[in-house]
Image 1 (cartoon, rainbow, N blue to C red):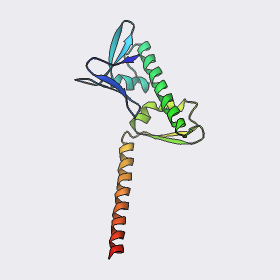
Image 2: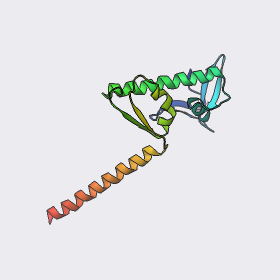
Image 3: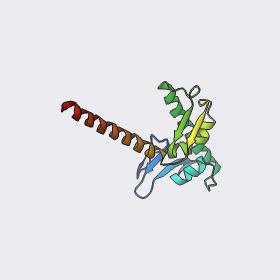
Length: 149
């Protein structure tokens, strides 16, 4: 169970990552037995990506189960929006895609997936789209100038 903390709060981001806001550093509280265990984003990323961690096995399982459920929710939402990844190949980009890769690859809801590992891929892509849009707008203004003259 992941819960809100008194010093901050936790939200699910559109990138798929859990983000906690605290005065000092983003942290999550995971219920363990009779107490909460405070963990950092780095610990969660280590568990998700299969890197060694000092977190107890039951905490790692809680993190994996939460991420698997969240990834399934994202894929379900795509299907609701008429994007059926069982019939359509997909390219996942950015840092969130790298974190969720294992869960996406093992999902029965995805037939074929490619991954762009660069965590800045989304920013680069949006930069390319913005540049193309600006060029198109400039071309239209030039064309309008000739039409008026």
